[in-house]
Amino acid sequence: MKLEVVNMYPDILNTYGDMGNLICIKKRCEWRGININIKNFTIDKEIDLEDSDMILIGGGSDKGQYIISNHILNQRNSLESFIEDEKPVLAICASYQIFGDYYINPHDEKIPCLEIFEMETISKKERLVGDILISNNLKLDSLLVQKYKHDLNNIVGFENHGGRTYHKYGSLGNVKVGFGNNGEDGKEGMIYKNFIGSYLHGPILPKNPHIADYIIFNALKNKYDIDHLNENILNLNEIDDSIEINAHDENIHLVKNHD
Ligand code: GLN
Image (cartoon, rainbow, N blue to C red; front, side):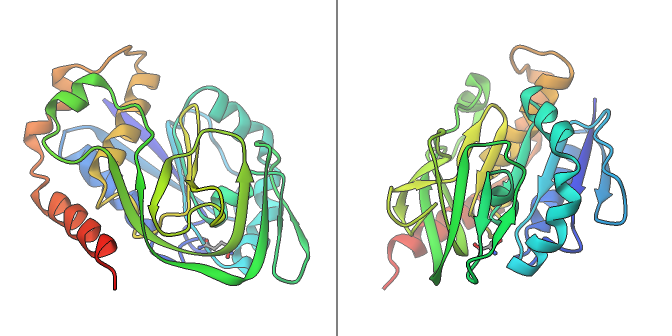
């Protein structure tokens, strides 16, 4: 089996180390014998989503957001079709915001966004910064649930954003500790089909391996038209997740006992 992964704007939207999500996806595929090909796109190239199976985009400064805004707007229709075809997208912070209608930056300027989701982001002076713990609202495949021997109900990370995001879609999780989308409605992130938007840096995937596998297996199920996972894909036993699980559990402990 093979996955084509599109990594967008790694030179501009990686202020908070979200490139670690790509490394996590790559290694978890390789450890299972799933071939993976990574296609990096940034503003000097046209984005070719043909035959791609997954998109990863990270977070960045308002300046970075502004730089990529014009470039990514030209890809609106192909990105919308990609999402509607239920191919996984993981968009973190700035790139999550860009899939909405608009982003009002701290200078009250409206940065045009993709208008794929009915979602608005308004920046405020006080930034929402710190460790964050949320519930996991993703519906994991039953075989994953059976095989996993660790916490599936929590997602842990770090947030740093001025933007307050408002939408009516399903959230990635309910905030247990931290701020989330806007520090008001107790929601964090967004789920629509296999699109996941989130404010969680960290990067989010290495210390939440259940989320990484959720994305990988949805990409495989979508590409190979598998209506459920089967043993030879999972081979979960082949991956020793002890480091990831320790990091996950230790982070939760730290977030919960933050003085
Ligand atoms: N510049 C955006 C904000 O501050 C996104 C920041 C980020 O990607 N962490 O809300």
